[in-house]
Image (cartoon, rainbow, N blue to C red; front, side, top):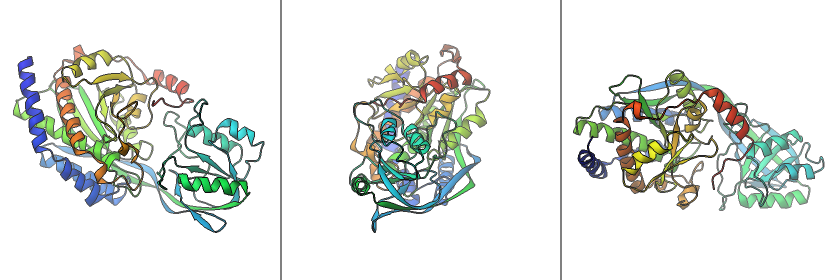
Length: 455
């Protein structure tokens, strides 16, 4: 397509979308009317049905990809020391527990600090800080917890780095390690301020009463999918983002922002193709995924259910798009780097393509990467350009106002323009992807011992 026509299309995309955006209406529906969307809950099921009907109302044929997951709910969580009740949230998949054991302060919970306790960890409640110990080589939280468990601790209380008695629903699993699913012992979060109290209690050799009640069960959830077919069979690219949240939060940033970007980009591209009578060579699949907050189970199911034989040419996963302005796209593998940079340069937005030095297991792009598929995520907050609202995820204050509408409009128009170019590019002009799952597994086995670089 000639440059004059591309410029005309770009102008129409930007003008049309900035005028006709439905971001605020979607945010109100998902973040306010429906609210928190723990996968398999009534609210999450309502959200999935709403997304499907919304796409249908905009002439996008849609369907739900149903599957069962291993899920859970917390009925009670408490920490009490010497009659004082302290802030507490259970970590993901924390088992039920009731104990009254002595506290021990292990600092940051590093292997060195655990060894320095000289065997005094056994049957005690270890307290550690979630941050990394200054000036030392970083140890993943999963490895720190695993080592403390091997030393015989009865439970671990982890202090949240945030101030103001804020706490996240956090996890200690590492998706790069297939065996890292359940925590090796009960783990509870407490606030930064109450961690400082616990340190004083530990000096006095006081005991902590801890009680957690958790129900584990299986239930059904679904990914929501719509497709714009291409003229070449079995050729497609994917855009995805999860619509679920953790307990008790509407997830304005995490991840109402990402889900809306998928919903709106699908509509924007459909309108563009209809307006200019465009038939793409490569089809586009849009997916709002469920159960991201439950160890990426929706994404793992989608990859295993759809891509055993055919690989998408490219995957863009959208998560927490209100954490920073769009600065580019981050790939898992290098072979698309120059190709995508040439495509994104034509947007004239000074965006850059980068490649992660390690495979990032923190969001729904990871199951695609593990399968050797060219998956990516937008470059938002890492390294620079981090918004204060970047801190708001996995907690109650991540409300509707944390979604930044103007930023999301820019994301959607940029994605629409980029995907239009990509799906009009002949598959023979794309670099080949010769990666195998075996090759990726070998790489992950080397990387899983190390913290993922984020700065």
